[in-house]
Amino acid sequence: MCKRLCVLIAVLLFATSGELNSRETISIDCPEKVQSDCTVQPLQTLTGKVSKSDAKVWIIVHPIDSAVFWVQPQASVTDKKWTGHARFGEAISAQNYKQFEVKAIANPAESLEEGMQKYEWPAADFSSQDLLVKRIAVN
Image (cartoon, rainbow, N blue to C red; front, side, top):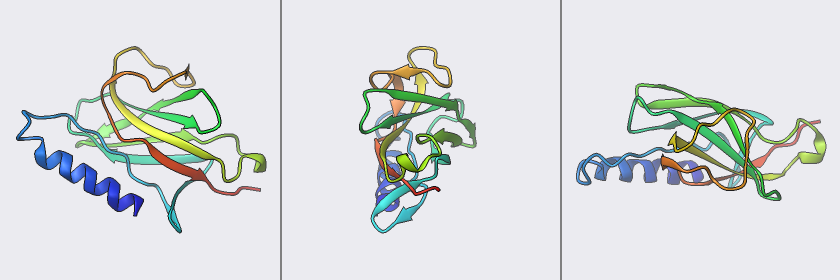
C-alpha cells in the first residue's frame, strides 16, 4: 500500500507539472514491505525520483521518539532518479521495531553535512512526503 501510494503521488505530481509551469517534485520509495509497514535495515539504501536532474538531494531521518532530525549523506542523482544511504538508529537490538520518519529534500536552503543534527525538517526548494518506516529486527 505504502509503495503504491508513494508511486501514485509521484505520478500525479509529475503529470500536473506541465500545467503548473514545471513544478519541481521529489518522491521517496518504500524500501520494503512487511505486512502493512514500510521497513528498513539499520543501514538502508533508499531510492526515489526527482524532477530536476541537477538537484542536490539529501535524506533526512527523524526518530519518532526524538526531537533530532539527522542529515544523511548526499544522494546521487542520475537521469532524474536518486539513490542514497541512511542510518536508522544503531545496529543494536534495543532499537528493533523503532519507528522513523524519513524525507528526501532537494536543494536545501542552507549548507548540509552528513551527521548534522537539526531540530526541524531543513528548508529546501522542494521535498518529498514524510515516509513512516519501521526498523526491522537485528540480533
